[in-house]
Length: 379
Image 1 (cartoon, one colour):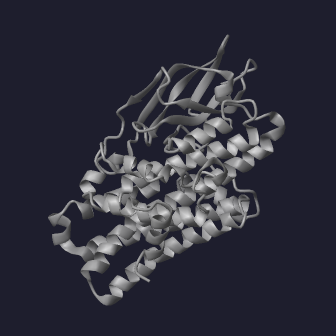
Image 2: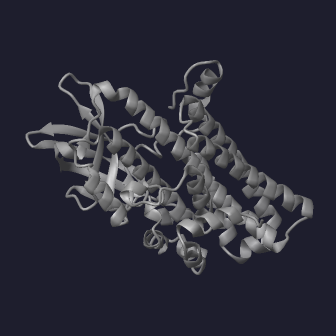
Image 3: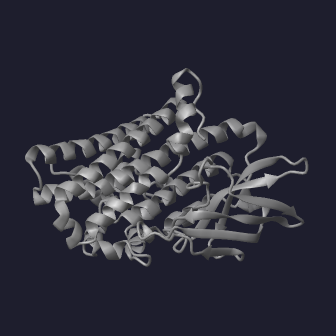
């Protein structure tokens, strides 16, 4: 079997024609701010990858999703990074709907509309914010006579300029001063939602990771899902599953970006045979860790132990990606580096694996506590 063949075959099976369409476009164009990759992703049904079959989705397994993400990231890194947050948001929406959706706007009709119209869903959760949990509120809702006024922002927010729906966590301030969490969902065209330039780096500029700012957005009760107090245990479990999927998808994405450089080394037969083999083995080890995590998810193991495994996987993959990228660039040589921007770009884009939450430093005490027998708490 050729390098990454299983990933490409899985992608072609679920999203036929997408890899070929992306391959026809130069990497620099795919990674530009106004790239065509995200709309190609939509056109080929990528938005429905993890949507349940009952709602008209492709219902990909965790293993299939991980392989598709890796294959796409090797061709279009920005698109893979951006749509990873779509998959996370969609998974959260459907999970929340199943558990808490009765009597809200998040009903079967809306969920089927997401699948039918191939909507892109942006995440307003806390991803990207230092020392803050991914599901921690980034916005606050103030009660009014007709519902709520919501203000706050998410930065960076991937898919900010292509999103159809904006979802996220919102703090619900009560009269006694306490703050409870709710789940917000709004059409991207809702008055008061503004997209503000934020991303200043050339790396992953195509992920559309600008700021989404909400200023006194009028929201009805039905547009905020508030888990009842007697279902807080279910909410905790849902958050745990979401975090496991998030880490799995992040690992698959950056394994794919690093794999693009490895593929170039193998195709050009750069360096000694032993060096090329070691490079391939290292990145395939990262992929195997991701697939191992995916298989645990498929087996229904989404408990606190698997959450710890997902973080161990993430931090190990992070190190494997960093090492692989450095050695691949060295083997490709100076002429490959200066002859095209692709090598430098892929190298820069891969570094972002370290910036997704939680950071290694924030989890030191949590992991040490877990390995000492305590439940894992993600900071």
